[in-house]
Amino acid sequence: DRNFNTSFYDSSNGGNPLLYQHLFWFFGHPEVYVIILPVFGIVSECVLFLTDKDRLFGQTSMTFASIWIAVLGTS
Image (cartoon, rainbow, N blue to C red; front, side):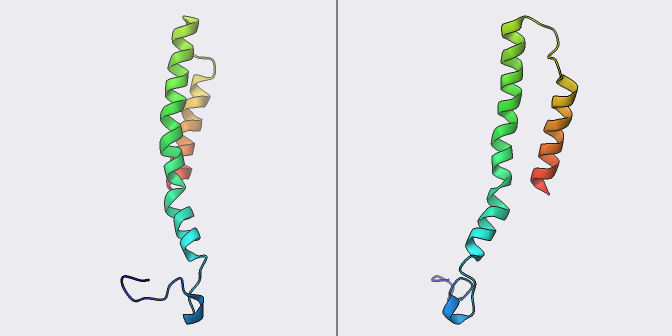
């Protein structure tokens, strides 16, 4: 608003002061999933390494859950 002389956030000119929070939630929320998905993979590999197993229990369901988190996080 300051740099481009607009009134998107100024309520005295008909703007919405909560618009910034809504825009941040819309664009910033998927970043949480970008951070957490690799953590799921790292923890899974650590559990496999520490238990000396070939396959993690629930690996298929964890894979589908990670895919759904990625899909829903970007929509």
